[in-house]
Length: 323
Image 1 (cartoon, helix red, strand yellow):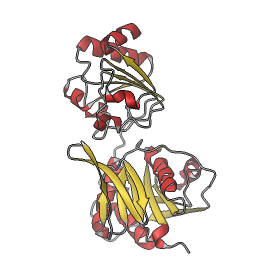
Image 2 (image 1 turned 60 degrees about the vertical axis):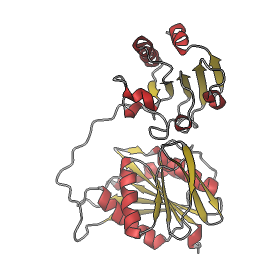
Image 3 (image 1 turned 90 degrees about the horizontal axis):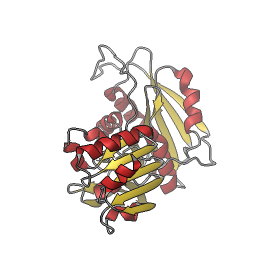
Image 4 (image 1 turned 180 degrees about the vertical axis):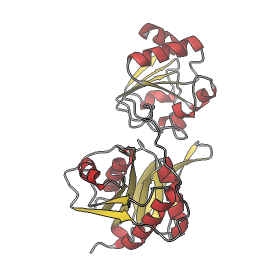
């Protein structure tokens, strides 16, 4: 029998037949920080349980001791309230010390509901996690993203945290999941939310979070002609353009293009930074990029400390040479 203090529950989702990448990343992190803990992965899936074996194959090599596939019955429609109620019951039965959730829009909503139902503590959008004895230390930005603070919950159980996808790296391990369960959510007497109809969105165009090649631009590039050249270049590379927070004020970009703590965490194979100084708010979002190339006119720019290759020079000139 596993001691309740040794259990970590990780929650993720399947949305539109796509597995949330944050789920396997959190399983990896849970195993890394809790090598002697009992890791339970809970994945919400469609009501069609025939697809469950496919997801088992996708996630069983990421360190979970046990996997629970949570689906709704044919008479129900999955929504935040339904999933939160089901997870709350499961968590009460499992009695874990820690619950980690992927900070997708669905995951955030579910996390807040569970936190209220269990009257426990919740830290959102953590950048790092580690244990000090039985306490989960939750590292997150604060004061306008200018500092990192460490949060612990000495008395509240379970200790809950959400983490954005691409904050950590997923890594397969030799240990394979031994226990696999399928749980179906049945009708309740008085659901708080009733779904009157369901309309499926068309496939979402690949965003900066999913791109294998990203060219990121900062305040060092303000000229519209240079921005156009960057967009043409990234199109040839089949990549995406990302920006720092100040650049979202331009008409060409939006918050969806922003990289960093208050934007998107990315993990491309190649990242080219153009005219970016390297503030902590930004660099927190690129730590999982495989190869980082940075161009800045300041040879002491902080971004160079995060880079595999650095080029000291005018980013606009570099773009002109690449175009």
